[in-house]
Image (tube, rainbow, N blue to C red; front, side, top):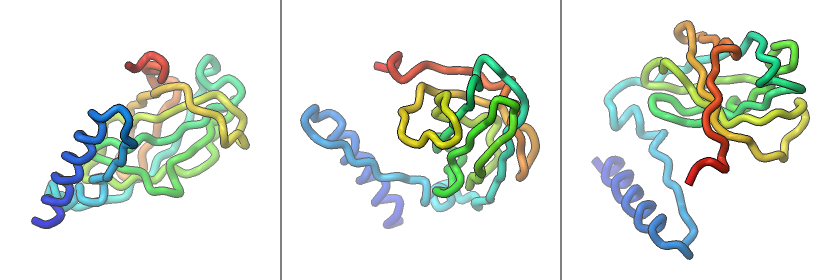
Length: 150
């Protein structure tokens, strides 16, 4: 009960702070409480990306998993790079209360070593499989660029 009360109070403080233009926004994540809030157990899922999409990948595609219910990414396993020939470098490990149908990434075109550049926008991908799932990069949909959000 204390955890639920903490999450509720945290969300209220974030919404109040977000309405104040000069305030810094602090985000209190509820991901660690998804199991407690839903009553569902957490399970680990691992993902692999394959396939080719030359218009999307170009000289390489950096993907950062965006936490979204029912999953959050494990801290050391949310960045992957897809090479122009469709090979994946990095790990994708998620903790979920159930298997999602799609997952979203922040993405940008860059070579494998590019760490500092900002991402472009959202990429949404359907997944296939169960605890070990796969993503065909050619079936992903490019969403809005960050500059298009208001």
